[in-house]
Amino acid sequence: MSNPFAEPRPFPGQDPWVVPFEGELLLVQSTRDDRHLSVLRFPDLAHMHDYDETVIWTPKRWSNHRRQLWAPELHNVDGHWYVYYAASDGENSHHRTYVLESDHPLGPYHELGKVYDAAHDTFSIDTTLLRHDGNLYAVWSGWEGRFDGFPQNLYVAPMSDPWTISGTRSLLSRPAHDWELSVAPINEGPEMLRNPTTGQLFIVYSADASWTAAYKMGLLEFVGDDVTDPTAWRKSEAPLFTGGGHGCFVELGTTIYCVYHHKLTGEPGWGDRVIRYDPVRWDDHGRPVIGREDGESSEMPGVTLGPSLAS
Image (cartoon, rainbow, N blue to C red):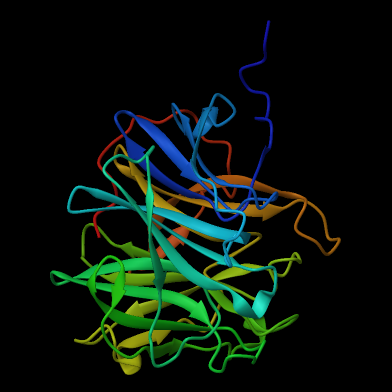
């Protein structure tokens, strides 16, 4: 007889993006084999291993962006499904964001091309969508110049539709605190989060080196009127969360969960990451707190699905 209190098997993965669909959950994540993008479908967060996999995109062999497929995200915009992902020709500095479109989250998909600010066609990864006051924006991690390497910053730009950036990017955040650059000066993996009670808007981002145990999450709080105005965002002085990074947020029942990846060892590298999840609570100022009140993490029971996280 199985032990109901046994720790769940670690689920290997990185850069998870989870959305509810028809009473189940869909997961897309970075690939390790560069061959394709796929969607995993499973009943709830406690049963990720019980998944069905659907390959939704296989790049053409002659494509100049068929390598290093990183951090896909699956978004529903006005009834259409879009997958944003970063890819290159094998050279890291050539990473750019591309988008796929479909009428169904499991495809078939067709590619709409590169998503970029034409005035700054530089390294671009981890693109996500920000929907605010009826308008659509892209938020991503990138370099100031084409061959900078570091630092990696966060940028925002308006979109005229889900595949077109229609304005010049604005710099939202660059690594500045010691905890953002102890190994490498990196801000990446931006994700939107709203307090459902107060309406406060946040960007939760990942900082420092993803290939080390120093990876963690920081917080930007929107305190202005224009989301493209860098002065409208206030950065927290301390990390929001340590022990993992590149998370997403999904609302299940009455609880918002942060789904993120955690590195199992202190050895540098990307091969030992697993997906975990923790509930989001709110402090007295309406800001997020990630983790259970007892300090435990990722040992959550199955949860009932609710609406997707409001944007």
